[in-house]
Image 1 (cartoon, rainbow, N blue to C red):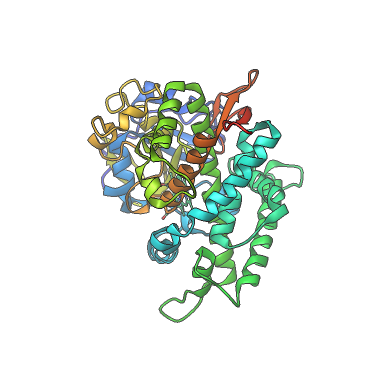
Image 2 (cartoon, rainbow, N blue to C red; image 1 turned 90 degrees about the vertical axis):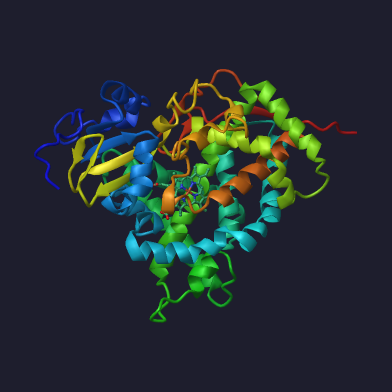
Length: 443
Ligand code: HEM
């Protein structure tokens, strides 16, 4: 492609070497400010790389689907991600990616998924009862333990038992390293702690793999243990370890974020909370939740979509340009990094009027605002590499919300900072401190 007639996108590349990294990591309005100034495509320099931010449904479609052959996933994510999460699905391309995605798919669909409902309910119920005893708690870290236990029991077939707290803590340390500005490899540094946590988690996963070798089963780990490629070769233990680490990571960090904002938004909007409770009452659920029950929770689905829109756990996705391209008249050269912006795309007032308002009705069948423009709601990505765990996450979130709405009340405690902090995954700064009680009258 000839670039002589087209200019690079507008924007500033900031200071030498560090560029605009500090602003990107510390200013929650980094993208908003630049979008107002430059529009839907602009350049910057973050995490040591020349980067172009692209926002809006059209940009999402371009990156996620129509022009996805211009991009590499593996080359796009920051180096910290590559080192901490290893060569896993998230960071693979081409045939290698297709093979592994196809291999893992059965653990996230159909029969397998249907079999997860009971275990999810049992684990969630244990946490709810425990919070009732605690009376006051900080929800974000508690939800993190709960979602981690669910992912690890259902995807790895392990029963972490009393190791849950420490395993969840190692994941927090690993996650904190993903966006460490200075990847210093010392035991005291954020990045050093993240590397140590990764090693401890990989050692734990290896033990789980060894336990399962003689009886693999058909959860995600079992599928990885049994598979053979066309030459009859199995995945190596190293390959299985990093894929399992990614599934545990992807399978709980993001869900925790969405559940936390679900609880926050419901408490802040009593009329929406009441309508959601009424929907649950009308379903007349007496015992265990069935898949049929979950399908009928259409208002809850609208609420979850609105949480995804207004509080997307992942702010954007990164890619490396492997084929130069032109978008909106601007030329983007090979080897630059491109990031599609999930959060700012969800703020487009032409698609979502009053975008700051929490309004689940925008996803009612009458309004269906997201259906009017493709790729306008991308909290789970889009196109052929749409989130592999979408159905798993929806099921877990619906079960949790249903049990919470039917049996409990909660009150947000005062004197806390609820500002959403986007790094590493969106969370309220104080972690959401609440008073938690059962709504059932006890005799
Ligand atoms: C609320 C929960 C979740 C959210 C918001 C979420 C969000 C996302 C997003 C935005 C992407 C695309 C990233 C990109 O385009 O660069 C993605 C991909 C992915 N997600 Fe999720 N996710 C969630 C839950 C899960 C769960 C429960 C799992 C698995 C247990 C999972 C596994 C994956 C995997 C493996 C990919 C990569 C797919 C591929 O590249 O082929 N996610 N997710």
